[in-house]
Image (cartoon, rainbow, N blue to C red):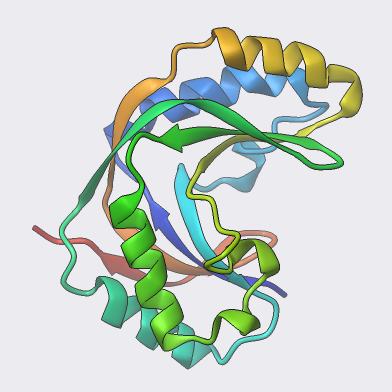
Length: 175
Protein backbone atom coordinates (compact mmCIF):
# COMPACT_ATOMS: atom_id res chain seq x y z
CA UNK A 1 0.00 0.00 0.00
CA UNK A 2 1.47 3.39 -0.95
CA UNK A 3 1.98 6.18 1.56
CA UNK A 4 2.34 9.91 0.92
CA UNK A 5 2.96 13.28 2.51
CA UNK A 6 0.47 15.82 1.16
CA UNK A 7 -0.37 19.47 1.74
CA UNK A 8 -4.15 19.88 1.77
CA UNK A 9 -6.68 22.67 1.46
CA UNK A 10 -9.68 21.82 3.62
CA UNK A 11 -11.38 25.22 3.70
CA UNK A 12 -13.60 27.40 1.50
CA UNK A 13 -10.65 28.58 -0.61
CA UNK A 14 -10.72 25.11 -2.26
CA UNK A 15 -13.83 26.01 -4.30
CA UNK A 16 -11.99 27.03 -7.51
CA UNK A 17 -10.30 23.62 -7.63
CA UNK A 18 -13.42 21.61 -6.84
CA UNK A 19 -15.21 23.61 -9.57
CA UNK A 20 -12.43 22.65 -12.01
CA UNK A 21 -12.74 19.02 -10.88
CA UNK A 22 -16.43 19.06 -11.85
CA UNK A 23 -15.76 20.75 -15.21
CA UNK A 24 -12.84 18.46 -16.14
CA UNK A 25 -14.66 15.30 -15.06
CA UNK A 26 -16.67 15.46 -18.29
CA UNK A 27 -13.54 14.18 -20.07
CA UNK A 28 -13.31 11.13 -17.79
CA UNK A 29 -15.39 7.97 -17.66
CA UNK A 30 -15.88 8.59 -13.93
CA UNK A 31 -14.80 11.69 -11.96
CA UNK A 32 -11.35 10.76 -10.64
CA UNK A 33 -10.79 13.51 -8.09
CA UNK A 34 -14.24 13.46 -6.49
CA UNK A 35 -13.84 9.69 -6.15
CA UNK A 36 -10.92 10.23 -3.76
CA UNK A 37 -13.21 11.80 -1.13
CA UNK A 38 -10.26 14.00 -0.21
CA UNK A 39 -9.80 17.78 -0.57
CA UNK A 40 -7.55 19.55 -3.09
CA UNK A 41 -3.91 18.87 -2.29
CA UNK A 42 -0.28 18.93 -3.39
CA UNK A 43 1.59 15.65 -3.03
CA UNK A 44 5.19 16.04 -1.86
CA UNK A 45 6.32 12.42 -1.75
CA UNK A 46 4.93 8.94 -2.39
CA UNK A 47 6.48 5.83 -0.88
CA UNK A 48 5.66 2.22 -1.59
CA UNK A 49 7.39 0.95 1.52
CA UNK A 50 8.29 3.29 4.37
CA UNK A 51 8.70 3.19 8.13
CA UNK A 52 5.42 4.91 9.07
CA UNK A 53 6.80 6.48 12.30
CA UNK A 54 9.57 8.04 10.14
CA UNK A 55 6.89 9.43 7.82
CA UNK A 56 5.08 10.97 10.82
CA UNK A 57 8.27 12.39 12.33
CA UNK A 58 9.29 13.90 8.99
CA UNK A 59 5.93 15.60 8.47
CA UNK A 60 6.02 16.99 12.00
CA UNK A 61 9.61 18.24 11.65
CA UNK A 62 9.10 19.75 8.19
CA UNK A 63 5.69 21.36 8.86
CA UNK A 64 5.12 21.52 12.63
CA UNK A 65 5.89 25.25 12.87
CA UNK A 66 4.54 26.26 9.47
CA UNK A 67 1.67 28.74 9.16
CA UNK A 68 -1.11 28.16 6.62
CA UNK A 69 0.33 28.53 3.15
CA UNK A 70 -1.25 30.67 0.44
CA UNK A 71 -0.44 29.33 -3.02
CA UNK A 72 -1.41 31.26 -6.12
CA UNK A 73 -2.16 29.22 -9.23
CA UNK A 74 -1.73 30.60 -12.73
CA UNK A 75 -3.07 28.07 -15.21
CA UNK A 76 -3.66 24.47 -16.19
CA UNK A 77 -0.95 22.14 -17.44
CA UNK A 78 -0.82 18.40 -18.11
CA UNK A 79 1.18 15.20 -17.79
CA UNK A 80 0.95 13.06 -20.95
CA UNK A 81 0.69 9.63 -19.30
CA UNK A 82 -1.32 6.64 -20.54
CA UNK A 83 -4.22 8.59 -19.08
CA UNK A 84 -3.93 12.35 -19.49
CA UNK A 85 -3.57 14.22 -16.18
CA UNK A 86 -4.65 17.87 -15.91
CA UNK A 87 -3.28 19.96 -13.06
CA UNK A 88 -3.21 23.51 -11.72
CA UNK A 89 0.20 25.15 -11.94
CA UNK A 90 1.53 27.19 -8.99
CA UNK A 91 2.57 30.69 -10.09
CA UNK A 92 5.65 30.56 -7.84
CA UNK A 93 6.79 27.21 -6.49
CA UNK A 94 9.91 28.24 -4.55
CA UNK A 95 8.38 27.75 -1.08
CA UNK A 96 6.89 24.40 -2.15
CA UNK A 97 10.30 23.27 -3.39
CA UNK A 98 11.86 24.28 -0.05
CA UNK A 99 9.27 22.15 1.75
CA UNK A 100 9.92 19.28 -0.64
CA UNK A 101 13.65 19.61 0.06
CA UNK A 102 13.01 19.52 3.83
CA UNK A 103 11.22 16.17 3.45
CA UNK A 104 14.09 14.71 1.44
CA UNK A 105 16.59 15.93 3.99
CA UNK A 106 14.90 13.50 6.41
CA UNK A 107 13.98 10.61 4.11
CA UNK A 108 16.31 9.33 1.40
CA UNK A 109 14.84 10.38 -1.99
CA UNK A 110 15.74 6.95 -3.38
CA UNK A 111 12.94 5.53 -1.20
CA UNK A 112 10.19 7.55 -2.87
CA UNK A 113 8.41 7.12 -6.16
CA UNK A 114 10.54 8.36 -9.04
CA UNK A 115 8.14 11.24 -9.83
CA UNK A 116 8.49 12.52 -6.25
CA UNK A 117 12.27 12.69 -6.31
CA UNK A 118 13.91 16.14 -6.22
CA UNK A 119 15.12 15.95 -9.83
CA UNK A 120 11.67 15.00 -11.20
CA UNK A 121 9.06 16.49 -8.86
CA UNK A 122 6.67 19.05 -10.31
CA UNK A 123 4.50 20.89 -7.76
CA UNK A 124 0.89 20.64 -8.89
CA UNK A 125 -2.71 20.34 -7.77
CA UNK A 126 -4.42 17.63 -9.81
CA UNK A 127 -7.68 18.52 -11.56
CA UNK A 128 -8.36 15.24 -13.41
CA UNK A 129 -6.19 12.14 -13.62
CA UNK A 130 -8.00 9.61 -15.79
CA UNK A 131 -8.64 11.18 -19.16
CA UNK A 132 -8.51 8.56 -21.90
CA UNK A 133 -6.62 9.22 -25.13
CA UNK A 134 -9.91 9.56 -27.02
CA UNK A 135 -10.81 12.65 -24.95
CA UNK A 136 -7.29 14.10 -24.58
CA UNK A 137 -7.45 16.61 -27.43
CA UNK A 138 -10.77 18.04 -26.28
CA UNK A 139 -9.53 18.15 -22.65
CA UNK A 140 -6.37 20.00 -23.67
CA UNK A 141 -8.42 22.54 -25.64
CA UNK A 142 -10.61 23.07 -22.58
CA UNK A 143 -7.53 23.48 -20.36
CA UNK A 144 -5.95 26.03 -22.72
CA UNK A 145 -9.14 28.10 -22.77
CA UNK A 146 -9.94 27.91 -19.07
CA UNK A 147 -8.99 30.75 -16.74
CA UNK A 148 -7.33 29.14 -13.74
CA UNK A 149 -6.05 32.01 -11.62
CA UNK A 150 -6.88 31.58 -7.95
CA UNK A 151 -5.26 31.29 -4.53
CA UNK A 152 -5.69 28.38 -2.15
CA UNK A 153 -4.95 28.43 1.57
CA UNK A 154 -3.37 25.11 2.47
CA UNK A 155 -4.09 24.47 6.13
CA UNK A 156 -2.75 21.00 6.96
CA UNK A 157 -0.23 18.36 6.01
CA UNK A 158 -1.37 14.75 6.02
CA UNK A 159 0.44 11.46 6.07
CA UNK A 160 -1.89 9.19 4.10
CA UNK A 161 -2.18 5.70 2.75
CA UNK A 162 -4.10 4.97 -0.44
CA UNK A 163 -6.23 3.75 -2.12
CA UNK A 164 -8.63 4.50 -0.61
CA UNK A 165 -7.23 7.66 0.97
CA UNK A 166 -6.85 7.18 4.70
CA UNK A 167 -5.40 9.94 6.87
CA UNK A 168 -2.87 8.34 9.21
CA UNK A 169 -1.62 11.59 10.77
CA UNK A 170 -2.54 15.23 10.31
CA UNK A 171 -0.28 18.20 11.07
CA UNK A 172 -2.35 21.40 11.29
CA UNK A 173 -0.66 24.50 9.94
CA UNK A 174 -1.17 27.10 12.64
CA UNK A 175 -0.69 30.87 12.46
